[in-house]
Length: 155
Image 1: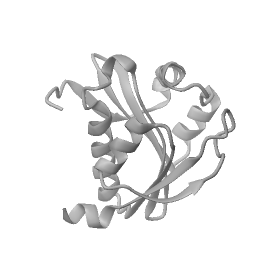
Image 2: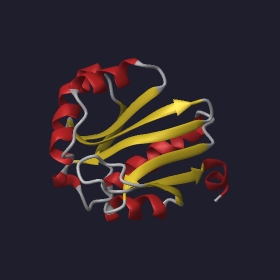
Image 3: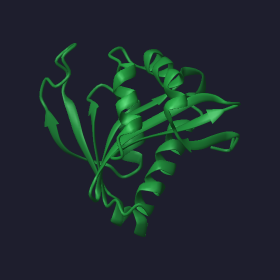
Image 4: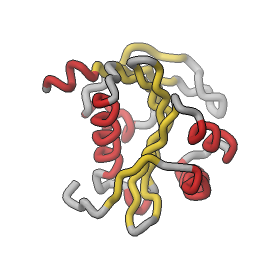
């Protein structure tokens, strides 16, 4: 991403309205304001974002458990897609996680989400399993992905 006019930061309660609005734009089944609020208040959950001109362009949430992280959500506003914003956000968050001593990253993704799969596999995530019929709206499978951050750090 050549455009570094995006500001990376840990999101806070004051970002709650922007998070909920972006969530509604990006996903058919959304987290509620209460779910975001709980993530922002609990110490083992993190939400980082990229803002441009003060507006939330993308966010990524994850849970930190000992030396592992589980990516919960990654969303990019449609007007900021295809600009490397998701890639930049993922890279920045993974760098922070490695600095925090996190060694392993996990996530689940819809089998049909080819853009997300390309992003994650491009970072070295590998498929470790499948949750058959995981998504309730259409019984689509969830692919389980894993990344060893220690190995990635050596690359």
